[in-house]
Image (cartoon, rainbow, N blue to C red):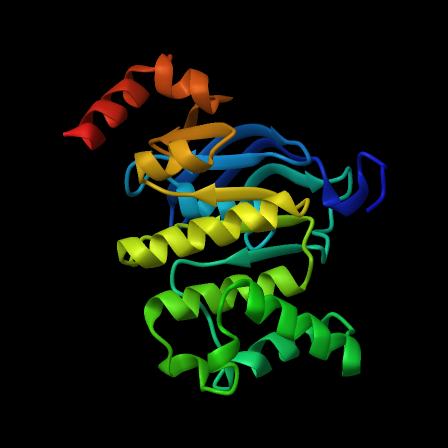
Length: 240
């Protein structure tokens, strides 16, 4: 991996980024810089703009006003990946889903075979590699989506509430995998409304309230002494 600070589409810099749909402002005046290496967790109540923010930072949405840049460039780099709350899987086997993603990235043949096996092994899905992806359990599908992203060796991985619909065992498995992906050098940007999960995973917290960033602070500081009334009320509400 290059030492250049701008390699891999980092830092991600949003300036005055606003997104509106159907005349409704979903996210307003976002000023945010995400550097390489950390685990940023985006917190907020339902409807606060978490998913919209991740899509803007990933480049799936274009700001209605303002800008988002990746490593000083306006084009989203191909070295970023995203996993959604409900995985988008092809009507193919588990292994073929990863193979397709690698082919789009230009990797085929024996190199792809090795990458597919390593990714499935890392998420403990080798035994279902030939099964149709869409018949897997919810937890297995999410692990497959993570394996597919991991196989691409992304510089940044965006995770939009990846455990929201999973049981505790599957949630722990996903958190383990996310930790291993991060340990391999991938920058993590993840949304959740789960406070215990955020405490386990976050280095930095971005807290959204009403479509605006109310706080952007180190996780320890956020949970110890949040600055905004909205954040304090959110933390107390989630503890009830």
